[in-house]
Image (cartoon, rainbow, N blue to C red; front, side):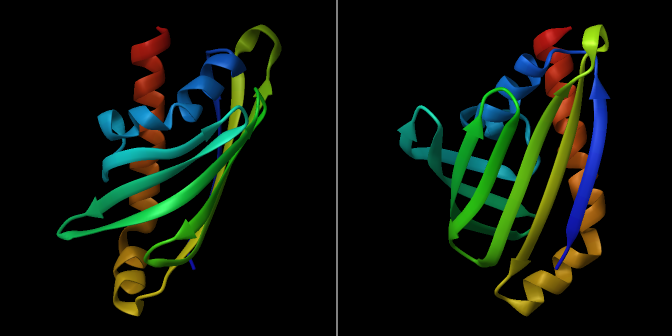
Length: 143
């Protein structure tokens, strides 16, 4: 089961960083591997999304529930699809006039052992690209 945690300081407000992560509808525009995303249920404190993701020749669709407490935390819980489980958490901490510390955690496991072994080989590089994509998107939106 790959797990990853990262913390990074951004020169943008927590509100901006929260909005960037909360805007899941835009993920296909900038996130590597996110081929399409459809929001199937929407509320004031979250949404449910159907995501088609792929890495190389592999792709699949899954459903996730996204819940938030503005502007401090976003939780993503796996509902159904090719995984045994998926949980990720974003936390946003103000740093005075120096911006925002963003913490990211992810933990997941595929049902299919072949896919799991394949993802284990590239997981950390993929997550670093994923985090870089958010950083690049923040520069585009807020610089």
